[in-house]
Amino acid sequence: MPHYTRPFTENDFARAWKWKDFPAAQKIIREAFFNLTDEEENLAKNWCKVQGHDWQEIVNLIKDDAKKITYLVPEGYDIPQEDFTFYENKTFIIKSTEDLFYNKRILIFSIPGAFASNLSKQQLLRFEKKYDQFISNEIDEVYCISVNDVFVMNAWAKSLGIIKTKMLSDGNGYFTRQMGMLIKKNNIGMGNHSWRYAMIVEDGQVEKLFVELGLRNNPETDPYQETTPELILEYVKSSVEPSLTKELNPSLITTSKNVIDMWSNSLVK
Image (spheres, helix red, strand yellow):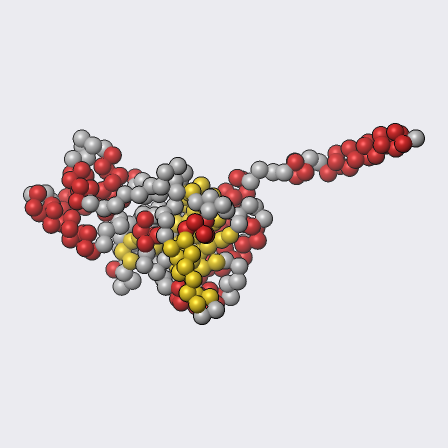
């Protein structure tokens, strides 16, 4: 499948204003709206002013239709191409999307911020506890991603005794933004952070996406129902093809072996 990208332009708003004639523009404007930087929002407001359109009317229409969001990177598409910074043995190490996620089946779950809430702490600890179960069900690695710098992510993991789950720093928010999951949390003084989501990535493509409901800027609540390790593990187990030995009754296997042995012995005699 192709890599799914859509850079923001003024045309997004021009097309969105005509969405009664072009329904596909609804998706474009919603995607743009939930990921606007302050600079882009000012650009959009100025464009509306010059064109004689009501910015608040656009915003209200988007909010009314927010539950129908189509994510920037839907299932079956390539994840964003970005570099991630690691700090190991007092050295910065840069690894690309290809280094981390290609030729592998990976579980990534996002938290709104390290050290930010007891909910995120418990989520990380529960994924850590179930790490071995994920690995035994054809998951090659488990990553916790957040819009925090690498030092904060490492310190948080160390404080919780995290050993197995890998911490993934998206300090600039570039990856999260391209995923369509970067939101503003200005209402509590946190700036840009990630919405809570998780995904199974196989060979660089989104196999399955789990997203908490109500994706929006400045949320007053922090939903946590769709991205629990238990729910994701249930999906992972259901997606693994059982081996032949697991499908067969052990007693049948033993009986078959005995028959083969008897047949082999009769040939020798």
